[in-house]
Image (cartoon, rainbow, N blue to C red):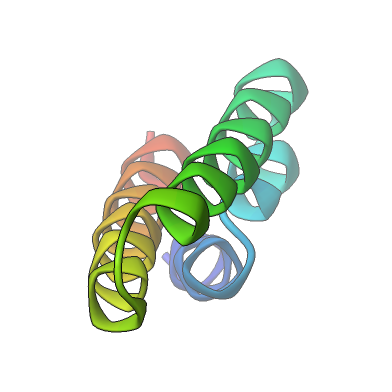
Length: 72
């Protein structure tokens, strides 16, 4: 349970890190690259507050996914 919480926290701050620590390195890379690409596209297209909202949603989902992966 502690590992799941740690993975969730790490993945919240750096999406993909928790997935990599939980054992799925490929999924971690996909989350991280997707986070970078979406963040860059949002920075080009949208206003500042939307960028933060998009990054927050991605971080929350990545933390949830890392918690579920590490709990199994």
